[in-house]
Amino acid sequence: MKIGIVCYPTYGGSGVVATELGKALAKERHQVHFITYSQPTRLDFFNENLFYHEVSLKPYPLFDFPPYELALASKMVEVAQFESLDLLHVHYAIPHASAAILAQEILKTKGMDIPVITTLHGTDITLVGKDSSFEPVVTYSINKSNGVTAVSEDLKRDTLEHFEVTQDIKVIPNFVDIDRFKKQKKDHFKLAICPNGERLLVHTSNFRKVKRVEDVIAVFNIVREHMPAKLLLVGDGPERTRMENLARETCTFEDVRFLGKLEQVEEVLSVADLFLMTSEKESFGLAALEAMACEVPVISTNAGGLPELNVDGVTGFLCPVGDVKYMAEKAIHILDERHLKNFKEGALNRAKEFEISNILPKYEDYYNEVLEAFQAKHVVVN
Ligand code: GMT
Image (tube, rainbow, N blue to C red):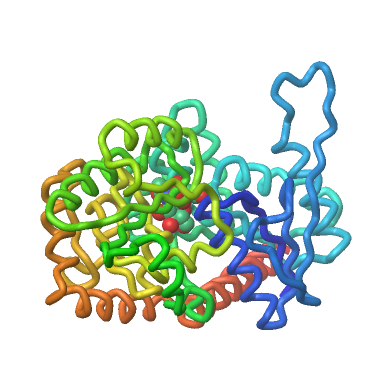
């Protein structure tokens, strides 16, 4: 199959899922064409079936807001025609789904008709998409897509509740590459960070408000009162400076480190004892899954799709949003020598259920299903 994948090329979860999916499809001999404004961060190896097409946006004095969506739609038309794509798979509804629908319409005028599949990732529905400034376009482009997937049952429910969706939504969860995300022997690193055998707590995110990183710091401060511990925060984003200031004001300085964006986050996860995900909303929680694959138990909120990943009392604990005392109590329970090993095993076993080889066939089957329905419809119409 020849598949055009549109995504954000950055460190965000939707871009990671799209890129890893494309890489896995290419290994299965599908031809994958990424269409985006810069090289996706995780598109880091050569494969003869992988292609990258850059959307270039010419500056013009009139454009206070350069029309990326139009440049993207034009690029999709060009790539679809030139490469004879079988389908377009766009990740994150805004603005990728509406751009794809526009591209599809333009292609029809050129005698080419291909289906569009939209994958909903989270904030495109739960935060940004619901806003009245986007809602009509999001609803329209979901309904016009030939196939729609969501990364959790919760996100599907949320979409059906807040948008007038007439389309079926197929749930296909996030996945992890267990060959990459596995516990590596990094004793020297652990010793450098925790020289006195301290417990190591880790948080990774894009430091947006929705992640409630202040709760990570609050939980750590309570844990720290009960046992020697260190906290590593990985990633970058709008809240980072505020969080660094908060950590300086409330924590012992040498116990907390902000590492910024890291390519090899699995190296940090390999030495972690506990992962904290304190989000107010989280459609799936890919970062938590990657931690679990590295045998790291998870304290998370019970928001969104997190209960579909984190099994309470087995892989970690689910906690009410903002209840930092409860999160800390459960963190201390996990970090107890008598419990930690079981939770680590629980985390790894659960992560294996989301191994990419289990999830990739779900996408391939769905592509075939959508293509067959699309072709059947066209036979009837013609
Ligand atoms: O907010 C983020 O974490 C980034 C965001 C994205 O779309 O780039 O992630 C969302 O998609 C991920 C991949 O499907 C999910 O694992 C995350 O849970 C989801 N984030 C939120 O819902 C806040």
